[in-house]
Image (cartoon, rainbow, N blue to C red; front, side, top):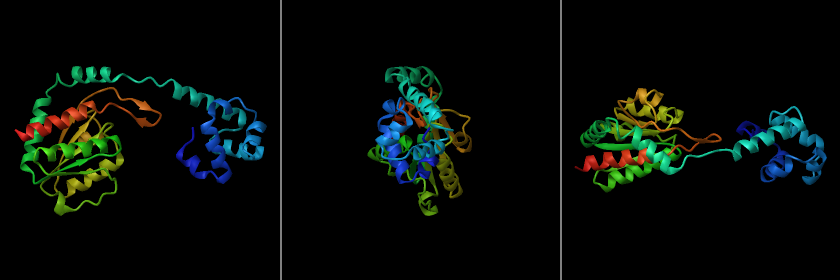
Length: 238
């Protein structure tokens, strides 16, 4: 409802109004326009202008959309961690993952360096993977900055472990392209095999669990990623 573009367009009074609404959404949903204006020391025309900026024809439509917005947030049902783990065990460990793990470990062993790549929660996993591999004797680095400058001297004869749940993260796709151009071998860990990142990788490991979202935030479990990173590192140690 409150898009990035809409928020960027707010003036000082509208920003104050936005802050009040987000903190008091349940109350605002039943307030008259005059009550909301008086509470925030603004005019009703300011409230109406605010409504138009969030794509509402008027205050009545704004209150309807606000109630729907609140209802959507309240009815998000998340799977338990136990359910996610069971799903991973059932769908993933029955597959031919051992060969993918062994092949990834072999590629890393032959490379001069290993780079872990991810953004957001996948960036945290990239940092974890890099630390775990380094702890077992293979020096590595991680990149979770979408604007990280790729240098050929650091990336040639390297293996990049690219992490993305959706496999469609635009910033990761751009970084992969840069890394491929300087000679890095790309191994991706994604949630499916038909994504862009999976298709442009030299090797893809897909783990297939149900994706979950809270609003626009992807909150899909990272349990499969942790397992795969640790399994690759331990296979490399052997």
